[in-house]
Length: 309
Image 1 (cartoon, rainbow, N blue to C red):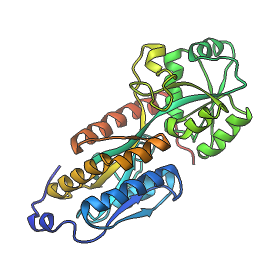
Image 2 (tube, rainbow, N blue to C red; image 1 turned 90 degrees about the vertical axis):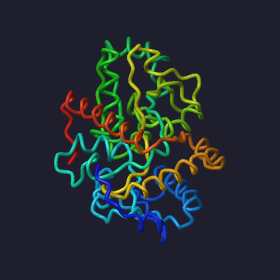
Image 3 (spheres, rainbow, N blue to C red; image 1 turned 30 degrees about the horizontal axis):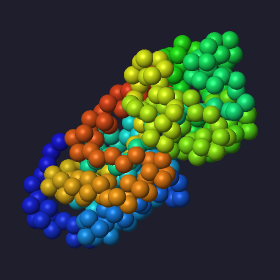
Image 4 (cartoon, helix red, strand yellow; image 1 turned 135 degrees about the vertical axis):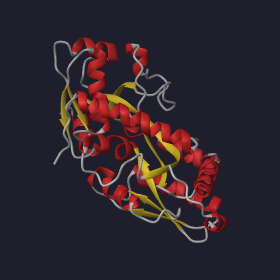
């Protein structure tokens, strides 16, 4: 990565409001986490932080728009797993490269994925489900063809040596509605999204894709506990800036984000929604993007996945 010298810019930064582009609609959990972090980030930077929702095409429209703006640190992307690690594996004509178009600032929040089932499904554990699926082919819903949930279900089939029939939906909400109604057997989505219905007893939690047990569901095992195969998968969001943003500016943004994620009120509010705050350096975030891009690309290729038109 080239870092053009711009001491005057770095010294004056930030001298005006900073915009965070959220490539998803307003009102959802992704938007809410960005606004929470943005509010605290503004206090750390001493300038207003404006949230700009630019939804479309699974987060790729807003992401592409940030790749084209001046690299001055005043327009950032709330980049996530779907836009920076999954979409590049699915789409061959993206107008940005996750590794070349942006420079990482840091991960802010994450949630592991959770396999949940209808309460009408007989198996009570994932091991029982694996045995059951050898003779009955359960249906598994996700937020869409090529979504993180879909790809995780492919890994589960491989790890457990059983088949499931994937049912793609246009988003997590209709999939969850059908899971609650018993129209589908299983669903893969973020633990943060499915947790409330698990807590209410309306769906059953089988396993998470976290490295250790999810704090909100301590009785639910991880996939590695069940199958002995490591598969750590998270839906994460963090800040990236356009490529060639001055290194000094990235450092200032990184320090401000780290302080924001250490804020007790931020931690409290994120915990209430089931999200995990993350403290990461730009270098650590860069390694996460590279590793997840490789992981999801492998699953896309292995499953011969094609994006929905």
